[in-house]
Each structure stands twice: as structure tokens, then as C-alpha cells.
Image 1 (cartoon, rainbow, N blue to C red):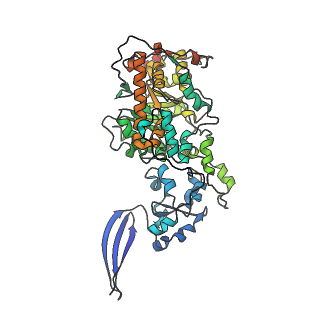
Image 2: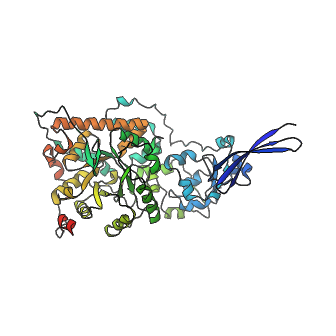
Length: 541
């Protein structure tokens, strides 16, 4: 008798049982239970057929669309119309292994949230899996890859960005680098800081300098924080958790993107005691999804100390560089159930940026959104994306629920020719300086040097955010690259403070800067606050 061993898998509800069965020539059979484990994937009765790549390849149309993810075969036909990125990106990968495209931009749990258990048809053997790899496109990553640089040789953020540009996939670079329309606002964010001159004092003992400060009552080692920056794993597998670990080494704060490529639980895993995080919130049309996320964040308040409500992008900006990536290696898809006309009408599609905005609510208002938010979290609220002094004043009227605002134009990625944060800072100082006493004012956008950080602090900013810089640091060297980014900015900030004659953050103020060149460009019309109620009166009502 010649024994033959087979390994079989059967799923009963949410339990998968692995059996080892031994067959003999005379028909005798012996079976033993090898393993019992939880399973999302329900094995189909024709599991053996699914193991052949030819069977999977047949289902490559919008009318019958199968994809392979992590060695399992999924029927996603019914999901196509609701995919945030549009159906074409999925159909392009149908009948193939889509894991490499899927994994960097989807945190764990997305499959379970959006597919039914029966959509998982079974597993596929490694030999067939190798034959289902999508063919590489000519344009996507055809450029030869250079090895990672020695991080100590990178002396500024521009050099880190240049190094990352050579290493990250073209799709990732286009998403990170892109901005709205002609990129004027993106460029002007940094240019505005160059227009501010510093006024150094002499005969000041500068042997000691302290960059520590307090943000929302939490002690941090730097006035720098990581602004919400999505899809970090496009740059490096370390992802948002790598950024968190780098920030921890400098006691810096991180505001995690609503569109992070890792779950909020994963990002704070192993976080240092007292490490401060915030959670960015894009309110969804389906409010229940946002409420469920707030419930998760509330449960992690040991690290997530505030909710950052983003307001400057209620609609996706036109990021042409990012959008062009949808045509790299693309092909036309036609079927009766999913025509090009219908695809053009629905949201989604386009570049990574537009895909991420699918389902984002555009109906937020002062009177409805903040009361709704108060019902679902008692964490401090930080409003991100204010670009005028009028809105800064209104935000201060909602204290103490609103604890801080971030002057930001979404990194120039929403409305081109919107003002840089420096202009809005100066507007507030001119029209309603009491805002600085009522709530904290943070800024982001265009920060490339420690001198930029100091200039913002001198104008009254409490914290200064960097977004792209963290992503490019990740692309240049993973967690170590982000550490190098913080190292450079910290050293430059300390050098600037020493040469100005300021020993600590509290000593910085308008006396150290000359903003004359910038002031001629800021808004000079009516304040719009003629009938305002004093913030101090409002706070007592």
C-alpha cells in the first residue's frame, strides 16, 4: 500500500478546520485534525478548481470580477460600483494578484468591512499565484532604482526630498508632491517665510537653548508636529508607525491622517508613555462611519488627545500630477453594466487624492457639525484649514470645545492661490489679536527650515506642522529617515534661536522679525467683524 497525504480545509461559519487525510491504494483512509482557526474566508466547494490560475483569469470583466489578495480569491463584482477609487482600477487588476497594489494603501480590516464572507471564494496555490502577477507597466517604475543614501550626508529637507524622489514608486511621489492647479499656493507657502527677515540681538548668552513647550497642556520636546499625511506606506513599509516612533525620539506630537495606511491602533502600538497623538477627522456622508471611528479614538485617549476636524478640503482640489497616474499603463474598460459614461458621472476615480475623498461630507457648518461632534466625543477639538481672520475669530467663539486652530491651505492641494499661513497669522494680529489669548493657533505648510519654524512662533503660532517632510523622510530611509528630518529641523531651530538671542520658546515674539515685505500682501479690506460680540463677553454667557 502506498500512502498519499492531502491537506484539506473546511470552513464552518467563522471557523476553519485543517485536516490531514492519508489515503491508501485499497481505499482505506485515515484523517486527523491538524488545526482549528478563525477564518473570514469561506472556502467554496470547488476549492480545488480555484487553485488553478486559468480559472481565476477567466473572471476579468466588470460583469465577473475576481481578484487575488494575500493568496485568497475574492469575487468583487458587486463591490465595483461602490469602490471609492472607481471600478476601473479594480477591473484593471481583475484575474490577477492585486496584493502589491492593494496593500500599501489599505489598512487591515478594510476587506472585512466592505465584503461579505461569501465573497471570499478560496485560496490559490503558490505556483498558480506566481502566474497571476500583473505585468509591469512601462512608465510606472521603469527608472532604475538607486540604493538608499547615507542619511548623515543629507543636510536639509530639500536633500531628503530629492533622495526620496529617487527611491519611492512614481505613484507615491506624484501623490505626495502634487498640489492644486499651477502649484502657486504650494510654492508660495515657503516663499512667504523667505520674505520675513530676522532681527538678531547680540551680547546674549546663547550656550543653553530649550525647544520644549506645551501644546494643549501636554509637554512636548519640540514646537514641531507631524501634520496629517495620508498613505505613508506608499513610501515605506514602516508607514505611520515609523513616523510615530521617530517622533517619540524627539518627544514630538503626531496628528494621524484619517486616510492613514495603518489603523489607529497599529500606529500607537509600542508608543512611549506620554506620547501625544491627535486624530484627523474627515466627516463622512454616512455619519455612522465617522461616529464609529470617534468611538475607537475615544477608547484610546491615553495617546489620542484631540480630534482634528479638517475643513479646508470639503471637495478635492485638482491635483493634475496625481491624476495623471491613473493613465499609467491603463486600458479602456467597456461593458453593458459599467460604461465609460456612467464611470465619469460617479465620484472617485482620478488619482489617489480623489479616491480618498470619496464619501467625504461637503455639508459641514458651524451650527450643525460642532454640536454633532460634541455628542460623540469630549476630546478637545482642533479645527484645521482656517485661512481668514474671520473664521479664526468664529472658531474662538466656540471655545472651550474648540481648543486650537490650524492655519493651513492643505499644503496647497485644495484651492490654488489661497493664502499661506503667514498671511493669516498677520491678519489675525491686525484684526482680532484676542484670538491668540482665547485658543491656540497652529500653522502648517511650506516649512523647510528651522528659521521658518522660529518665524511662525514669533508671529504667535503655538505649534508648527510638517506633512510632506515626514513622508519624504520616510521615503528616504523609513523610520530613520523621519528621525533625520526631525534632527535637522531641531538643530536648525536651536541654531536660529541662539543667533537671535532667545533661550527658550516663550522668549520668541514679534521683536525678532521684520514682516514689512509680507504685510503689503495681506488682506487689507473691512474686518467683517464690525458687529462682533467680544470673545470675552461670549465666554461668560
